[in-house]
Image 1 (cartoon, helix red, strand yellow):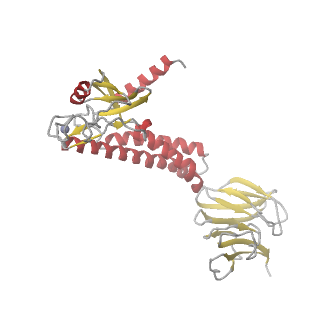
Image 2 (cartoon, protein in one colour):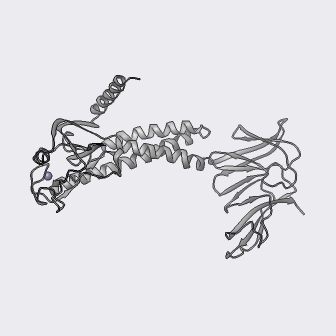
Length: 372
Ligand SMILES: [Zn+2]
């Protein structure tokens, strides 16, 4: 792809943004402020008095501030260009900042909501489809964000953030876009080269950043919590096929005795499901309707009549030994929701004093044995 094609795409995109009112072009100036140039008069107010006229509208100034900064330059140093703003213009800049935050939050919420909607409509959707739902949500959030007040001045035209913005940092210093004639004249008086040019302001960054946050949230955290793991342990002497809501999710080999780490982890979407375990010949061994995802650990033990499961708890270090130290899971249940963190499966907790568990705390292990 040549640079001409890239420019054409950017041009098309800008045209589209301008049509929905998300981009404005204002006649302004471009200044390169060198690294060594000192504009600050030492009192924090450059060569203007702190109460000089507002650089935007000419009203009595109420304070000074630095220029704003392109998002990609966030965290870099700013040139000491000072802008004088009146009370009204300061409020307007604040509103623009609040709008930025609101549009960002809307994009995050609708992005996460879009992915969640996919999970509700199609619980078994692969995560990539969830991400597509999230991106669609962010796009909707972008248009909703455009309706939030504070983004533009009345009439929808003109510059709405601070009247100076750093758009690039290079060898020669900071490139600053200026939309205030008064500020441009002041910089020119300081001997800087000020060129007249069109200055572009667009409103895609909060939605873009919010969208990236939403996708990272969905992919990094939420997708896995929406599809919790269930440990399926087959204690029979033949393999069992596990069917969830009519969908075969795993074939689990039989392990009749207690074997450390036994079982197959299966991710099942949150909610009520029919869990069915059947032999490879199709004979149903177990069929239960259960709520998946309400606890911290879940155990499915089809065909486990005569087998007992319990949780052993042992304290180490300064921790107090919980009572009871051991409790049985209900014998008649085949699906167990455990509301405690489980640290070990089908292995004894190390004895106190051994070097295995040094940091202290309570360790919990699920054990399996034949019922007495
Ligand atoms: Zn003003």
